[in-house]
Length: 123
Image 1 (tube, rainbow, N blue to C red):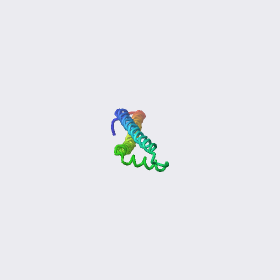
Image 2: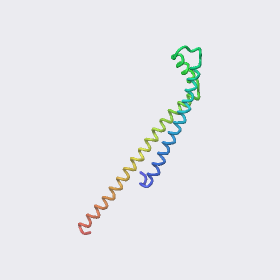
Image 3: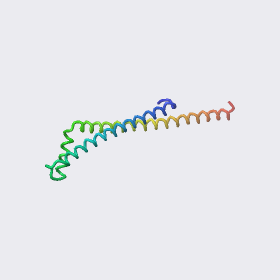
Image 4: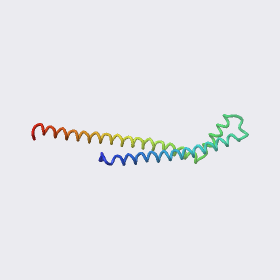
């Protein structure tokens, strides 16, 4: 367990890490949306496709062969896990800080109690 005074900085750093990952996730989501929009446009303007089911199948095919799209999906999955871990770490630090504060208060209370007991006994 670290010293009480180190927790606020560690908590800020952990919160910043969550924000960084969230920002990366938003950028990847924009990239995914762009790939999906291009696939939708490609399927929409294909005159050989007769109905929505065929357009959905073509969209799926276009996205399936797009290596950049697949890489973006993999990155999104990885970042989602990273964000969950970063949030868990942040919560862990917050909880540890709360415990450390309670332990410090308990130590102060025990010192005061010991001092008052010695005064009553006349030491």
